[in-house]
Amino acid sequence: MTTAVAPLVSSEELLRRAAEQQQEQLAAGVRLTTPPVSRLRVQSIEPTGAKGGRITGARAVFSFTVDPSDCNAWRTLHGGCVFTVFNAAGKITTAAVAAGARNIVSTDLTTHYLAGVPAGATVSVEIECLRITRSVGFLRGSITDAAGTLCYVSMQNVSFEL
Image 1 (cartoon, rainbow, N blue to C red):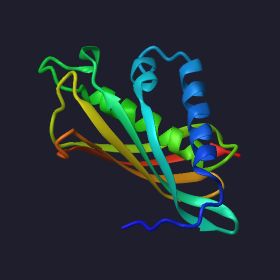
Image 2: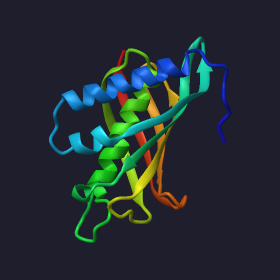
Image 3: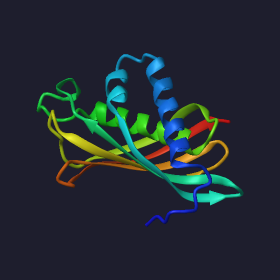
Image 4: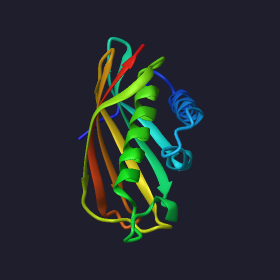
């Protein structure tokens, strides 16, 4: 259970940081990640923790529409695409929380596949930054379909430089 904290930075600033990180990922031009990353839409980011005048946690919600090119032979969201979406959303959330973070790298990303999502479906991607230090972030993620069915979950650690 998370609780909101008095904002140390505005929601607009967190959204600006998220958009900046997403553009950085797109500028990298990695062929396999560009299409999913370009379709991630930040819906909201809210701080959930603070320490010493800085944000230490946040909850971010994204939306993502599954394209046929994201699907496997069973016409559901491919596992590699799920992984990519969690990876990108985790980095975007980390950048929003840790102002000035650069060289964000996933050091561990465990994903559990619970239910498939068909092409054309729009899903909700939630990333919770459980804790962030000066160089490491600990994240938890979930993807739910329009009916609220939990389809995928993840645990992710990221490292970064300030």
